[in-house]
Length: 455
Length: 147
Picture: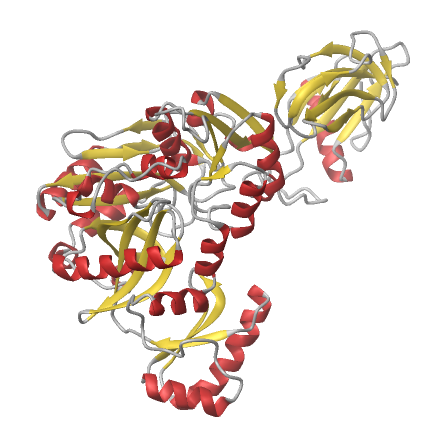
């Protein structure tokens, strides 16, 4: 890159596989890396391989990976010019993004204002509706205080409806209401819970889609007005709102339909002046797309889009943050083949309880179309303090069938000892006729698990 | 030594492993973490037990007794924060330091965070390197506490 670089050294404010992923992208771009870590992560691979490694606090995330002031001081003392937040932790914290920029550093991500706008579900939905992104029918704003007016809205939208907390997320602060008789109580109760959990009793209401799929659109935007969409991912296989297996493209949805939604998404990005990588999440049912939320960061499942488009999303994030222009046009982007990602978790196969411990054997799969993103090495100890994601196996094939076949071989090759993993769950899922047919809804996995445990 | 079961054995040199196990059990029962034993002739022994996760005051029958983690005669003074290490004059082997004495500063720009000594003692080792970027929790000096 040229002398025009805004930064030469990037502080990676994260841990685990994504920290390693960011470090790799930095290296390819000739950027130096600073690994900040908690005492529990001292032996991590990206820490050992960083240009500068600095322990910033104890295992508790609040005193390390979530400590804004500490991270800014760490950037200062290590001469980092930019901070990449990864996903989770502070990646969608608008105040942190602002503080990074106020300190004269580059935040690898959108502006604090964009994060703030998308963090509030009501503002986000309004902005999307204004920009022509399809939204689920609903109250289109905070619910009025009058129970009568709420009833009128719900009747117009049509039951079942879902009442949600404006400040909520991740499946918390929401309630499904099937008839008008249940509505008043549900609103009062959800408002009370929202006040307790999020300090904000504001609610909104939407049509409750009964068997939707989760389909999302990846976007990349530079600071010079170029906004691109990179195709769709289907992340319908979820357990307790946590994605388990993702694939790109979304099976059975015509590419013209995705292109139309993609165009609306990038139009919205231009309107709100969005920059960096982002994801528009939709529910999809009976040909209808309904915007749920926008994630203003790189996502766990970004590799499947990288495989189908050949675009290195993390490297592009860094280039965009440098102020560079995206060196491609929408018509240059080819979405080819099919990719699947299986999230590997250190958890008990039956109970899903986390399974921390030392990994005594770690044999990785390989061969054409197989990619493994992981920070785990032999004798690595999975810590109990953080989430249980230990890696991701990504398979790519010319067709969905080939991607599935390659993934099944990869999972059979993978050997992990010392901890429990969900590899067997993925193997069973890939063998499931309904999954193989494609297009299962977001409740499918939980139903499937319930049936399996009762039989 | 033939002390009563509920008494810490008399300190006469390094205790046997049986005695260590008994002392550890007594500490756990008393809800204590550390004990210092001395014989009045300058020999001292520090014991620290790891508290069990649930920290029961009464040992559960059949549960393994608390293990003796380390037997140490000196204590480490750790960095309370990260920064560029600036050792003070006190960070020298043989120096007598008192509780609260500052053996180093962790510097980040103009910000300085002191590294203070928790107990009175003698500096027996200087582990931290002056002028080097040093992480949270790193050992700066080791001190042999005064009895």
